[in-house]
Image (cartoon, rainbow, N blue to C red; front, side, top):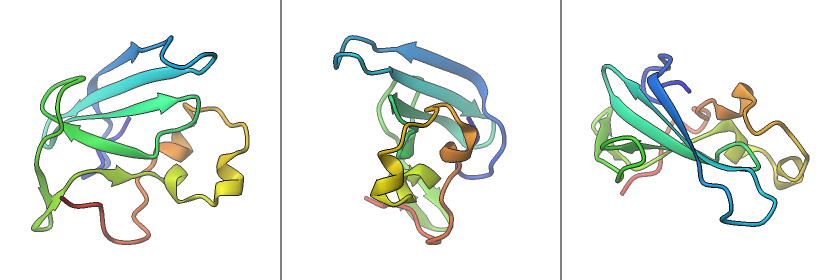
Length: 111
């Protein structure tokens, strides 16, 4: 995982298997810490994550992050921006290309 704010590789990364929530689906929570911007996490449910969230601790509650003067709730990934037809294709859910933050729109979701 990389920091969605500065793109630095996250430290202290953790993976928690949540298996058994939905039959036959690969289900995990991934978390990591940026020394400058804090903890972030995302869910992987048999597909790459749609967004990455700032959290107060690994597997914890969402927290407030301000980027360029705006409160940010989540950071959409490249996977989230693909056309739905492409999202239906079988891909490796851990492929780093899909985990990149989509900066093409220049904005993030806000509260």
